[in-house]
Image (cartoon, rainbow, N blue to C red; front, side, top):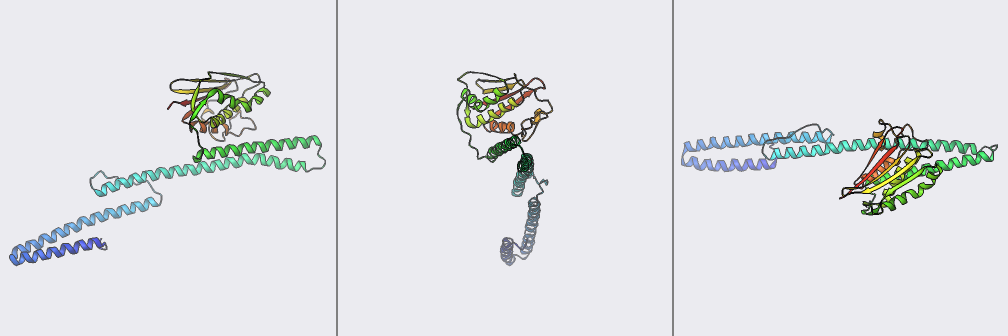
Length: 331
């Protein structure tokens, strides 16, 4: 405490002023001077005592801050008393809570990143291994032309799969990083559905599936048509993969004062209750997932729609098909 120049200066001023006053009073009256000396000593002692208490509290706060700097946020220094130090303690406690939440978020973020990298490496390892094997087989001189063509086509398919995976991950990373720009324009749902179905009509025909579209040409919502089309493509593609031949894929859309709703449903194999909570998790592959499934399409669709203040829900039962419900709420 006495290393503080301010405290030293204050003490010197108090002692100096007190001595001058005591000398003047003693000159007037000796007894009054003795009383003044006792009073001055008591006041200085009391002042130093309270200053010492304040310094102890400040030292305690310094220790608390050092503990925080070491990553420990469990201490509680809230103080319900009045005073400057009490206010400071409460403010420090608020900052501690904020740092604790940020620390938890960063820990979870690191775990998600580690899990994502692990999943990505696993997804890339399988096609890479397959291509390496086929390239090795292609180098054999006694390989027939028919087998050479088959292996070449398989390598091409694996490359297309890897290209789709990397492009999807790039889009997801842009959304996660907050660099993806979602427009706020009027989207006509009829045009959106036509755009989304364009790359999928051939797979629907090849699988001999029926397509039913129901909705008015005046149904609209505020959003980004390109990104929303990306989401719809992934949802419809999932329905195509899980719907048998002669099955039906239906798309309904309507609008009310609260929201615009798009419902995509199929008559496929359905999803079990145990799997439903995991449908929109990245890299999750259900029990009935196809061999080419990566488990990222529905996760990307969910992320795109939620980033436009919309919602994507799923209803399904085994053997009774699956229904995806998209809602864009009015502002």
